[in-house]
Image (cartoon, rainbow, N blue to C red; front, top):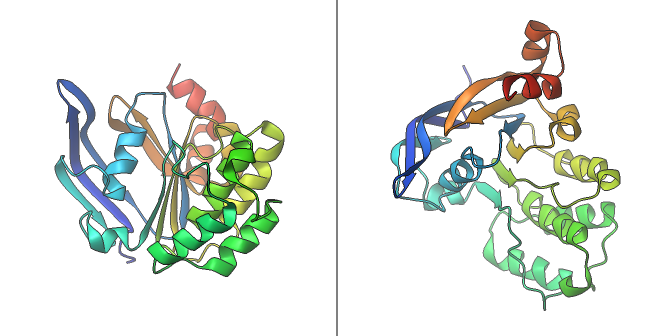
Length: 232
């Protein structure tokens, strides 16, 4: 049996008196694109930050290909946060150079190919790009790493509907068979065509998780319709 890419047991995280994650357990295999779905404030971003090793103060057990969050896991996890992490004064070319210097697994030709696919010129300053174009740069950089796990927090939220399909194509373009991609979103209709699995969250817990084909067959409906039914 294939070892899980991600194995979480009884994960809890509090911010003061507020419980962001409540005894959450989740296991995901490699070679999947998984939608992390839920309402705002349900704990999606906190969960991704724990997996990424950004948040270290939590209870429970988290394993990424057998590693607890730390230097070993960060070497195989590519994290795209929901807020921009790029400097306005940099050009796209400068961003490529920083990623090349910082990440040993950065595949620069792959990132450049993604930028070209997305119609972005590397001599442009980030300050001259629209919000949607900046999102495209960030996705090209994040997916340009040869990681085993990709964590994408609301990657298409700032992109107009017409451009979302191309952006989603970029996310799955050139993925290795063993890669696990976790995409948090509330735009389920747009994301559903590329999903292999879903994990629906509420109040810091996993409400429902499974393979999209199985869920569609069991429920007789789309994942988008199921989401609206579950969160009604």
